[in-house]
Length: 317
View 1 (cartoon, rainbow, N blue to C red):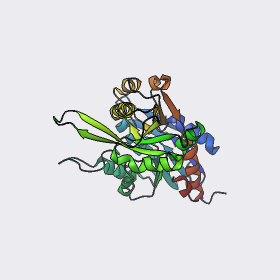
View 2: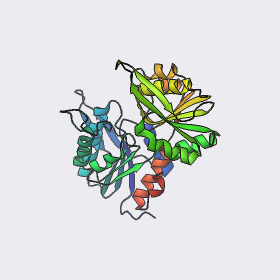
View 3: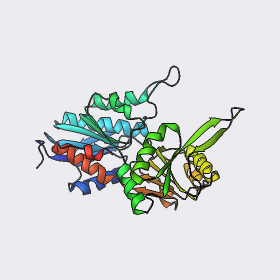
View 4: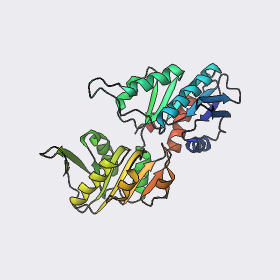
């Protein structure tokens, strides 16, 4: 039985209601009743249509495109829950927008990932549940507890059932993703390769060198985010040029903006596998190259553990 005093209530913003409903199905609870609308000037209007006093509230809202709109919605909803006397409010952010702006890499720029953390905390969230942050250190930007899940079990299960265990090479598209790729390679008993990107002598083009054995191997390019798919397109071509027998890619967050679809279709990739932390546009859902895996089960188990005050460490793999 739950040790938390209040009942579990699950609410959804406009960003990804389908994922929230799937999580509700996993938990066996109904969706919370609320009305999220927009005034004619686009201001957010939100009203909770049931009593939540003393309840344990979870609000599902990835801050995906349009990022600013969904971020403001999340803050407005959290404020409403706080002012309605919820016992605890957990912001479930499967995709954390602005995560790539996590440091000052140029003069006179903001650290927007920290600003977003401040906004969510100031709105009244008591806890954050998120998945595959661009940099794990972003957890330290919050002064409230953060449960940081990884989609690793979802991808490992898919690749294992598809028969790729021990027969693939996991490829990191850059040096920053080596730790993630190594963890997958270990779990799959696979080889590891890294793509080394360097500027050409004239400084205009990137020359990609594949470090590791990929010839005659099925290669899985692994990344946390695929946005415009430029890196993915170049990486797949470099791996193809090095003699790979087959090429697929796994990315947790399918941002897939701008020319992403054209680049994926024009690449040597046989398949791009993403999770549903972000809802895909219809054209990507129709693409035979794109496959979506659900993280609802993983998030549902985490929400249940948080509500029951039990350990979620088994999910941090």
